[in-house]
Length: 617
Image (tube, rainbow, N blue to C red):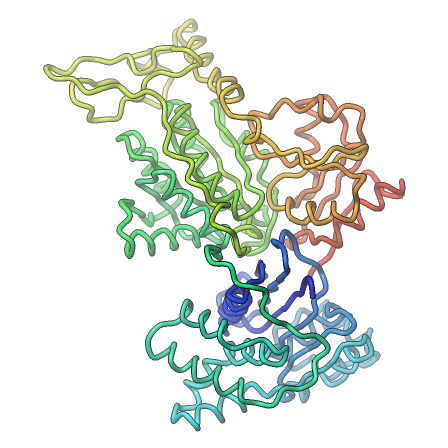
């Protein structure tokens, strides 16, 4: 078996994410490369959530629509994922749910309920009818009474039933691995990473009990793959947090907002328990978050804030102030479905233009987008280095899909890039003197002067100002200061190495352009389409010089938004027209099979100018 996808679904708050993390860590401990993706509803409890864990003999880059094994922790999962298990696959379910009908699934969307009823030919079909449809598609049903097993194990261990049932997620993982013939030792190692104390001991005993049960016949076997030490399992949000620590972060602010909160919470945990010299502050709103971070940077601390679309909207004025005062600041922007509160826990790449242009007036900023978990770690370091080298705002773009995607990575994928910055004003003794902090210098860069530096002072204002910081409306000074600030963009374009601007993975008559988290699906799709080229853009503003790479080719953009914002940006900056815009905006990520089919349509000449992908539940 070269590749395998395991999906677990159930009510939000029932331990579904823990189950997926356990499964991913267990197979990783057995030498498999693994990646996980999470889809969850924006309410806190009860609504449907599911996670995929894909494993393979080589690093995993993307995901597919259909899976080999579905583990249903409730009846809704059976109904919702009908048609998403491959022929020859397995559905593991609790037979007690078969007594339910669709009308007894209160969280099932009316649209989906009506479609299933029509498909199954009954007004209110039962889940037994749904299971028959799985079987008709060549899927093996595997009944497993999770709650009965939990009660039986709890009774044998002298544990109350309610406490034993809290291990249902572990039972589901153990049963899945046991039935495929996978040894229990890697799972026990994974448990030690997930739990502590009495909870760990209970879950260990549960695994031991499940592994003593009889193994049913399953069509596929899962063995270990030769464990190699030195690999780590991280999500995109965790990688960005660790990248900031590696990049010298000293101060981070945030106001809780999905999906950005995960990063700051992870930072808080690691600064508290591992002695990192970083202050993480939860503020009363995003306006306070950005202005507090600006203040910290003015005082000389490497500062950042993390947010999502609505919060970034509130930060626009504060970012303009940072631009006017030439304050180095990193804003990590986790994109989600919009506008307004939109789809709080679903993915999108709809904030590209806002990241580039958001706010009134003009000031220099860099916009950097990460394509995978490893890039999130590296780019978090780059963003801090660039902010302090060029004394400007750097917007680091991720999205919900990347934030919650976990990957097994080799340590070498997480290099330490070093802490870099531009010149600073040295302290001096004696009576403080005025320093011309905003004196135009080479490439728009002046030595940075943190507030409180002994021997110097200057004025700070949000108005236009002269080199010492005094407010002015003099037209010649205004011209000089605008030109000084905007010159930083060309300085960055010249100073940043090409490999950090973009990656040309392959040339082709048809050239695909992508940015952000579409990278993985496109790289795997290209394995089936050798005639297609792929250019993955990292620095989106200032836009890199790529016209020569694109001339004479059929251009295709692939992105998670409605209009195809990258295509508009390419036309604006190169004058070249994108022939095909492949877009997806239902909040679900583009899968490998979707990308393959879209690009095959382009190659065949059958694709329209705008091709909408609609996969996902």
